Length: 207
Image (cartoon, rainbow, N blue to C red; front, side, top):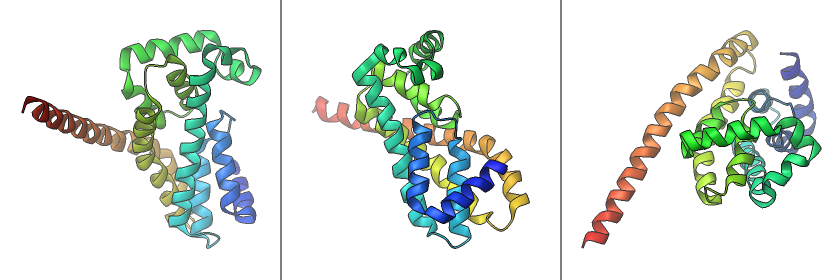
């Protein structure tokens, strides 16, 4: 909660730009929890320092740019990134090998669920780019769909809990479990959409 209070103070004084920059740093693997950052953005909106809908849009863009940057760096530099000191600390060779194994096992689903796995997002996105097994636009679709679930969840939670800190703290603890449920529902919706799209393509090809 101390970190949350400090972020609220900084964001209230500096507005949307501070929230946006903080989320870019989260995407780069800086040890700043993205979820708490999003909640803090929502809280300052609830306190009247920002518009909550604008905050949701700003945070969404910040999250996606941060994620996309890590994917593109991995895509462009590949395993050479492991020699960079900040990346080497975040993802030593053993962890990189484990991430590759997870991609072998779970494929695209891992990119979707990484959004709901604090501490793993940056490593997953870098590995996704470095493997060259997925296009940038597919990555952005999966990550963007997951972000549409998680980002508004945390921002509006902060907004509604701005003046009810005990309630907010309780739901922040419960929030990750709730997100897993929403993420599971979201994945089912995404899979149904893909299946229907594929069926339509097959029908067109068979004519």
